Length: 337
Image (cartoon, rainbow, N blue to C red; front, side, top):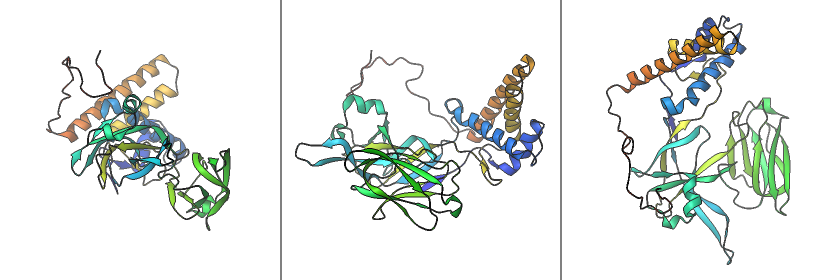
């Protein structure tokens, strides 16, 4: 289950297009392709300014944890070790906060796992750790299996999807699937592990990757050209039925007139357009200086808009900011120098 509240006074491509075109001396919709390119570049600036503005961090998902086999975790007795984890959905770039049954979960970085190991028994109850490995499917193979793919759009017929696997006899090969909107396309090789997936560059609809028994491993959206997922391992002593995560939104290009542009303030959009007009399309020192003025103006306007939407809400301060912490941490795996 997912829920997202998008941006600050969002608008649509149909509304933002004429503003960008006017600021760049282009015509809408005649120069639609060029205007769309700059709309996406402006949005990319907003997303990459996350450390400064903290924008688009309001994507929420309620996820049921799954059980996954621990890589190289089979003991001498032959029993496979498993861990509990949540796979982060593809529209989330990173996790800002997480809760289980209303209790906040401490979020540990992948560095900690390398220092203290992957034995979840040693972790506190309410804690999740970002795994160092990324994964190409939302769910792991349950067994060695033939793979099959399904596409939902007839426009994607005959396009090629590449899947690199380790076979049941431990060979690394690349499977080529020819998409077929009328049904499933199956491989002829058994897979023990999936290493990578590459989707067609002009994909129009979603593609499903599954085992031969119908067990779905992932449903890929057209924007996921080279899919990869992040997982967060849950402490073994914490066994929630579901985990609520708050994430930062992943950047995806907009295209259609009804697609959302996250900030709908005209002055902000026009300042971003002028930054590219003068900074990208000219080498004149005066134009480059003007571009820096425009991007500075855009930043000030974003800060003002965010502040107005925040209102008089009290923002808690970081307790470690501005004061030296002289205590030694009692947490295993950490040390202060």
